Amino acid sequence: MIRYAIYFVPARHSPLWRFGSSVLGYDADSGRMTDHPSSEFFISEFDQSYISEPQKYGFHATLKAPFTLSESASEQSLCEAAAAFAAERQTSHAEPLQIAALGPFLALVPSGDPSPLAILADDCVRDFDMFRAPTSADERARRLPASLTSRQRALLDRWGYPYVFDEFRFHMTLSSRLEAQRQARFRRELERLYEPIRTSFTIDSIALFKQPSPSNRFQVLRRFEFGGGTAISRI
Image 1 (cartoon, rainbow, N blue to C red):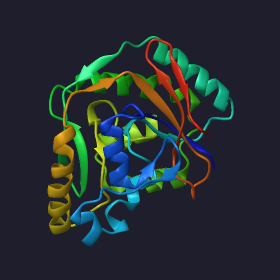
Image 2 (image 1 turned 90 degrees about the vertical axis):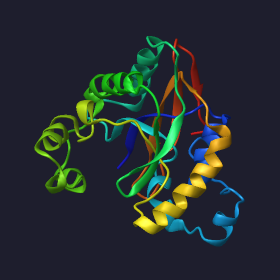
Image 3 (image 1 turned 60 degrees about the vertical axis):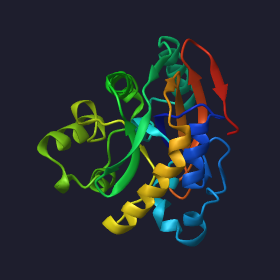
Image 4 (image 1 turned 45 degrees about the vertical axis):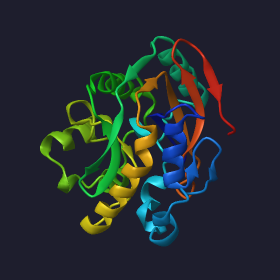
């Protein structure tokens, strides 16, 4: 089952991209594993359970959650729509992100006004929904609807994902689910590593990710630069 997703990712060679990819041990541009930071924590305490969940998806912020293509859609038509979508957008800048706990997860979240990012996500949810196949019963079950609010269940049934529009929160996940003590130790390490590169960042593209099968990790298929430029990955 091939899945696609629309994500925001930092520029390929930026310090933010290198930071996130090294923490997760996976570079979604190349599709290859990469070295973790060479710090005492990663040498002596770290194990795969810290990042095994987000590593499957690569370093990113979700704009349009993973979906399978509808019968009437194709990868080519999805790419063409993404190029047209990006061509109509203008580059903007966002204030630095910060490390935060989102329940049992650690992530980078906005420290300033998140509305430009939320608007971009809202537009992606709407504009790319025509390419999404209806949510299957198995997919719906995986989203754990029993734990969702009635509003989130309604969004899941309409848009295939419960955390959109008023339920959306921009974040770039950096950990698996962690119990409190392990999360606190990992958070201190991530804050230490992130602080030297903590700066504003540019929102100048969207990325189309592809997962060829459930056993594969997601990988960048193409990046679409705002204003019409397009970068193509190694896939």
